[in-house]
Length: 422
Image (cartoon, rainbow, N blue to C red; front, side, top):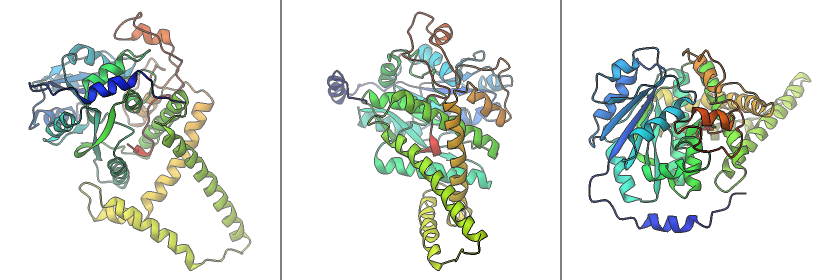
């Protein structure tokens, strides 16, 4: 059971009374990239167009086999090109953070397929200066694309962002587009077993980092004004592998972190998902048996629940940024709700099976392959597989003597945004 460390309280009190620095804060932006020649320019240009310019943009091509690095060099940005890092996004972010962010006050992270509005950094800076307890602020992801699958994902993320704004905190500072207070990142980098702020035992590191920041006493919030446009999964196969990675990561993190006051909602969500599966199996079995025996009698009362759900889905769809009539029809028809209900039940079962049988499958590689991206020919790597302390020490940015992991990682252990619930 998680308990608030006694030594944490003096630090929290000190943070609340830290005076503002008279000089303008230094802000650096990281753009980790992998074979993103088709979209990296848009990400960089969105950072260059900020009304509050960032002080330095660092593009981090990770083992790219295309023109990502060459395209990035056309812009006034530092191109920190790296060979394929065994720890993928976490590895390159840690290396860039140690090299370029030590003098920074705030760190912006933007995915290579993401574009921020021109006011994003300005609004983020105002949020952080007004709240010394804020450790990180997530943008509201807006999934791009006009297909039914893309619209479903856009509605899902809009619903999650609305939920986070309503409850006043978010459980995932989305690495798609976000800003961190560098003091909070420094504290996270000092956690035993960490080689930097971003962990190597998590397949989706943003949830893991958010949990650690919250555990350290920092507030993790959803920005009420900052959003970002980012790429969505274009096929059901790609979406399936993305969510398997997220769901398996969530389960692994929950097991590693244990049941505590910071993650009890995620445990409840897992339990609810299993109950939902049991309910649908029993409901279909019961009604199927009645239908086969000619005893199923339709009742007008059955329409009440679909009408209620349709109204609720329509209300959620109203909050979609850039919504149109197609989004509203998709929500009111309950297609999105039913599609995600069945798909999510399937990946809940698959993810628990992956965890329980101790699979060592590289979940990042599986997603890359599903998206048609290049897969590492060397096979299993630490991200999404069983990583030993020795492997992490040998390949870490600070060398073999920098620390030891507290425990071995479960496959897929680490972050996740099940249903993109931020």
